[in-house]
Amino acid sequence: MIFFGIQYVRAGNYVGGLPPVPPWAPGARVGADLTGVLLMAGGASILIGKRARAGAALIGWFFLLCVIDMVLTHWHGVLYDGVDRTRALEPLALSGAAFALISLLPSRLGLLLRSPGWWTRFGCRLFALALIVFGYQHYLYASFIATLVPAWIPFHSFWVYFTGVGFVVTGLAILVERFGARLASTWLGIMFLLWFVLLHIPRAVKMNTRDEWNSAFVALAMAGASFIVARVMPVNDSAISLR
Image (cartoon, rainbow, N blue to C red; front, top):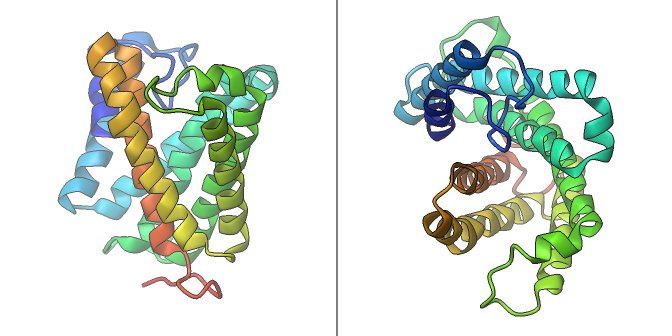
């Protein structure tokens, strides 16, 4: 979140591929600066543990409102265009993880955040729905995604389809809170982390473009989101365990 915030301030505008605000949103310099400050403040509050639940709630609501705006104003693109759909899915997944994080953080806040179980279930379902659509997109755009796999890794198409299955299976397991949802979410986080290290960082260092660095940190954020969801999933697949 801190990296995303810095990127907004540096760009001075909304940037495609940088969640959560779509590039067509109004506001330009002022809006980008406000978004950057909001994301840096929310991320820093979680990082240092000060008003961390408020920071997680702020990020969750902001990302979710951006998704709602995208769906309402660009519904055709979200439905039929893979780029616009991804721009909506990524902040939807991260919004869900931010809501799920609320239950894992200490708080002295008021009534709004006194029912962490509800926020956790709501967040996990948002995250799961995004995963299922991610999986669908791996089949829809398999040939393009295969070109992103590093050349030294064999069987590109196999890994694309395997990952698509993993997204769908993990999303369904989280939705029903059964079938090893915690384990599946953990492995999903490991997969995103490996993508960050093996795929995105080498590309970002080699190409050194804003888009590549943004993609790398989206993968890192999705790894963290997956680990958050794994943490709140039931150990015995019978009920969500909260504190």
